[in-house]
Length: 442
Image (cartoon, rainbow, N blue to C red):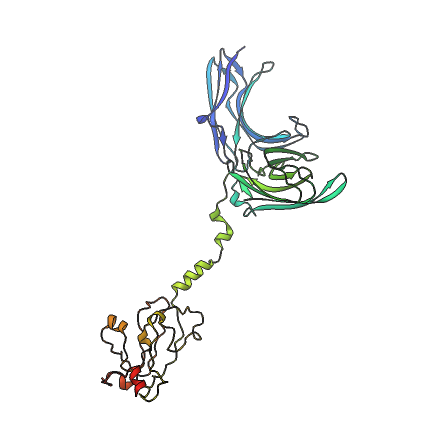
């Protein structure tokens, strides 16, 4: 009778973690110290789920098969002494769920090898497990965007006497996480009672439901962080962080017997008050660029202002202003002082036609040259001489409209005005107008 020295299964590249749709390949190797009669050598690859109502029991009350493939690599005959190697390759279905092992059930994937021998001879077999990870893209889950928040109010009772209420509010910064990401927890506690509360705590919880005759729930605390107490009549805001450890992904898509859920539990002791914040654990983290509100957001107010700024400002055209008539030169009254432009420190404060009624939304803060108000013939100013040479008043055809200076335009440019036809190009008057003292002495 032959004796088996070695019997093992190896995977190519020593790979042990696969994804649905991948193929798994390797070889079965065994060594005989003498010839062995066999009926067949078979290699099997399968994946299944089994659940039970007893802890760590393998007598499954319900099972679920995902795939089961068997190939025969040697027929009936005699296996010679020495080493034998048989390669294999199997395809993993796309619908297979992620591997899982819990207290009341498991999802297992394995490759097994059998050497079937004749009657009354011991059969030989071995197996090797591999792990399957089905990626969960959090961006594809419905209602995954935004924060997760909850609130609860609890009556505070001490020695059977109601002493007030405690308001507990909590919020997570998002609804989905991947391993190694940080859960930002924000808690607000308002103690409206006469007693100090117990310590506040935040915990990352896992709840696994096994679908047996009576659903079995297995709840575990993965991570817990604790805070302080809240004194009577006080309000406390507590911020904490929880790092997500490597965990099975939420929901176990493709499996009908096991369901995995995660949530953050925020609790107080004395009074016994608690709230939960459901979250998802996945493989592909949330991408803010895929946020539906950001993809469909209307242009912001700043963008609207930029658009308005880039659009030419079409201002209403002012009606033509009639040319001012020259005032007669009288030298007999001391109360009628000649018109003079405003001082340089107050340019634009007086004179001209008020435009506030026409452009109520414009800012009237532009500097206007004194020449804009020099209607009297012969008047000129030092500022005009310095920048523009001799004070010759520009001419223009009668009836033209003086444009309103653009809001962002240069403030030093004088606005062209309309002069009577007689004063446009003629040298009249030849003499300078009388001074103020001369007018008073006449």
